[in-house]
Amino acid sequence: MEKKEQTQKQSEHTVGKRRGSRFLQRTMAFGFCGAVLLLVLISLIMPDRSFSEEENRVLSKQPKFGVTEVMNKEYMEGLESYTSDQFIFRDLWIKLKVQCDLLTGKRELNGVYLGKDKYLMQAISEPDQEHVKENIKGMNAFAARHQDLNINAMIVPNAAYVMQDYLPKGAPVRDQGKDMKEIQKQLDAGIGCIDVTKTLQKHVEEGMYYKTDHHWTSRAAAYAFNAAAVQLGIEGASGDYQRYTVTNEFSGTLSSKSGYHKAEDTIEVFEPEGVDVKYLVSDSDNQEQRPTAYDKKALKEKDKYQVFFGGNHAQVDITTTNDTTKRLLIFKDSYANCFVPFLIPYYNEIIMVDPRYYYDNVETLISGKHITDVLFLYNMDTFLTDTSIAGALAEE
Image (tube, rainbow, N blue to C red; front, top):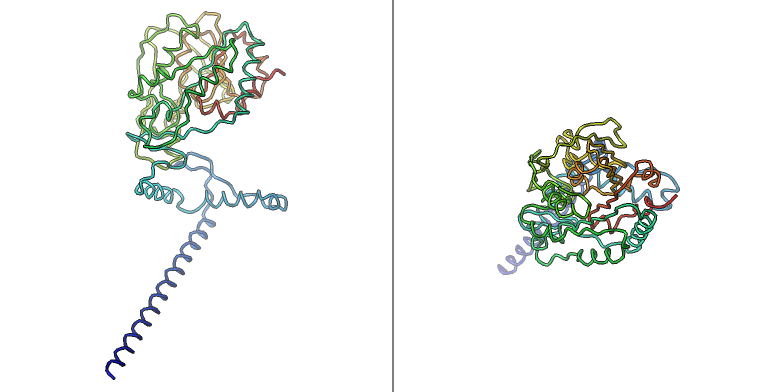
């Protein structure tokens, strides 16, 4: 009898525990759903943000609703992007995710490798071979039309290739050395190729790339200029520079993209010693001439790399007091921005064109400005994926 009562009590106790457990589970489930719903409601009530300082990018806006947009899935895709970008406390969730990833040993964060000494290096993209062929074809056709010009191409390898010893163990990296050889093979003899890979590798421990950004540093650009000067036709180039630190608080695009913010960079500007050449700069976004290549206002902004020429513009014009007849046209991406200041003293005029934003006629520009030299200056990743070079070079 006693045994029967004891068994009954144990059974009742077990049932009670199960009921309590189910109640707790339901409570937690309802609580979680309620919290998510509350966050969603707050996200809808809060005003939308147009820009994320943390990620350094423009955030999605509420998509336009319409039958056409719904039918072609444009609305749903836009809505998904919008709700993700405007979700309340988004920056906090990103930081928490990064910390969780790091705790689990993950060293690839949103396409960015976290390497030795807190170096962030962008995973190198696979090239679109058709676009590469079109760009090189366009460059060769351009060179054939302008055999009287001194034309060179400097394609700069990216950090993940130059700094392979800094990558996380087992991180895959594209062989940009092979890419360089293939480009050199396809370019006609009328275009000189300047390969600064070995120069950058030799000085890699001096900081050839920023830790938090995808660009090379001014120091790397200085070494590259010294290595390239002779082929560019520059005689008596000054190899001595005064270095000035303009900020120690640069957190670049790779920090923003990865969500990893435990390093900051120093940006330097270099002034050649023994060179007395004055110059004026204007660009397609600001026609007012100014006597400097540097935009101090950018040092108060998130993207401090824009201190060089105020960022990218369709066209930048630089006129100098050098009475030489040499006039240089540069087709470029943002890697050129910290390199061009080294070129300024040695030309009468320099025109920078960014094909991503330039829609005027290049042939008219060349004849109107009496161009004598041309330089294609890109980082390898952009050169292999860019779709605008061939279009800008097309003869109209």
